[in-house]
Image (cartoon, rainbow, N blue to C red; front, side, top):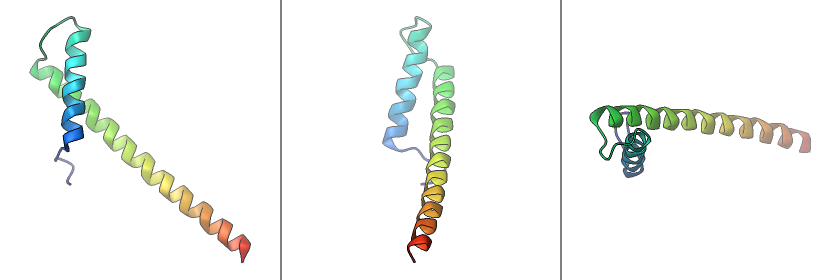
Length: 72
């Protein structure tokens, strides 16, 4: 999946966020601007989460290497 493609979960999150933005401004319908803001927010969280997972994998790998070296 490329950066520009959306999964079903991404679309659901964007729609939910857009409606949340509309409701927070006491509107019954979401506008295109709401969807744009929601898309930006969801994609930012997705990229940030991906970076955190990558960092977690690197830290775990380093920890395991140190642990195994001490066992040998």
